[in-house]
Length: 352
Ligand code: COA
Image: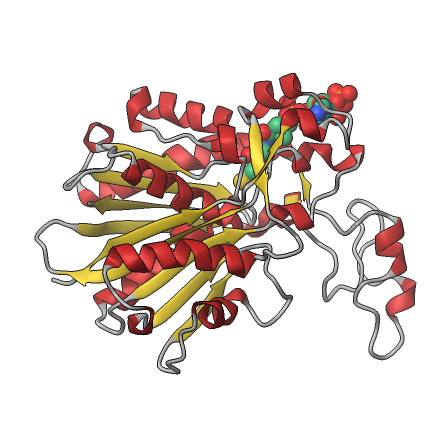
């Protein structure tokens, strides 16, 4: 029986470190507030003059491809997860293909928009393509350049202090090794609270102001409309918004639930988990999950302190760091779990 395994992995974070202290120059916040509520000490911001979401992804991808022991031309499918793409369209998948210099037109490229769950969703898609025998070398990347789209005024502080830039990549290949590879993936969604963690403008609604006006600002009624309106700029609506407490309360329920679901499906228990890599949403959320699953400190990977929340990139960056440090060994049972905007959430169990 064919399974998918992670054959190579890599990550990239930009050089520029932005401390909590630096953020106090732009908005009314403090190191103490940020650390106490989120655990974050610093994050990385990309260089806007020479980096984009897809160039960061390419750095991570080159390392993953090299570690998988293949050439870039052997990649037969690219899956790119991001909420902060280079362009509104086309997606980052083809930009990464070009950036890597993959000239083979045999390679397909798929972009997925599942925000913080993007990597787990992508892993599940890759798993199905490999198990079916359709592809042999899938490059899966999560990359985010949040710093270009955040609101650095006081109004945006609850969101802005949390997010950072970076990229992580894996190469997936088939394996017939007994018991090894991706054992299962679980995916879920519930659109009820879609706007509670979202960047709503610009969009096909023509302008949307949460809590007041709904669809279509007056100035978009002419044929052709106006995608980005002056009112959106004036009302400071071109930035993400988040109901922090709702996200927190839902996340601490859904994370343990979806991890138990994966364990139940495979006949395993929490005691079998060697390494848990939760999406780095907030250190307090990860600590809550750890307590709920009764896992010791050394089994749970936390790096949000130095990178913040890098959304689709957070799991592959943390996974790669854990692997590089020797925490993930041959035979380790690795559990990935994510929750985020949508809301969407998911988990994966991998026997390394
Ligand atoms: N610095 C200082 N004060 C801030 C602040 C900041 N960066 N952000 C918000 N505040 C203020 C608020 O304005 C509010 O002030 P008030 O009491 O005078 O009105 C106060 O802090 C409390 O705000 P609240 O939003 O209730 O704080 P909280 O305890 O819920 O913490 C989060 C906010 C965002 C840290 C928390 O809700 C959280 O972590 N949620 C989950 C977010 C998450 O994981 N997102 C990613 C999902 S993938």
